[in-house]
Length: 216
Image (cartoon, rainbow, N blue to C red; front, side, top):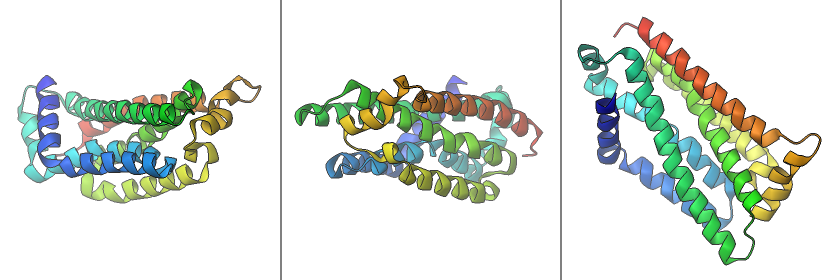
């Protein structure tokens, strides 16, 4: 498992630099333009890293080679889900730091607003891979690409449509999102996070089960 993770990290650093650069550019654009769509979409973009790595594995036939290694198919699947979580964690740290510095500089820093933004970011970032990776592991990257595009477009549209997920003002995000958690109807963001985590966990188990049945 450790070897699989190290391999994916090396491939990410060497072959996926453009994805990392685009992610940083989206965060910078979102902060500079006060547009939360760009920053939140960064999470969706970063969450596609496991799919990119699977594509490289299929092209180089590493997926077949891994079957000869002393690792199980479940471990191979787990490595992809873990590398996705690691990439997402790094993106969250960068985004949270950037938002905190910017809001502190203009005097609008709000812990609640920052928490709201991070919960929204995490929720949408987990949904895309959770829905798409089982298709990829069952049918392969090429056949699963249609499902990936449909899910990506749907999530991007939802991201743009929900008002408080597109708020770039921490104070406004606090009002629209985090403070609402204490009202009678408010548990939307924590519930969304829990649902996304549960969906990602269930997707992980489903992908492992489906990949065991797939012929390489």
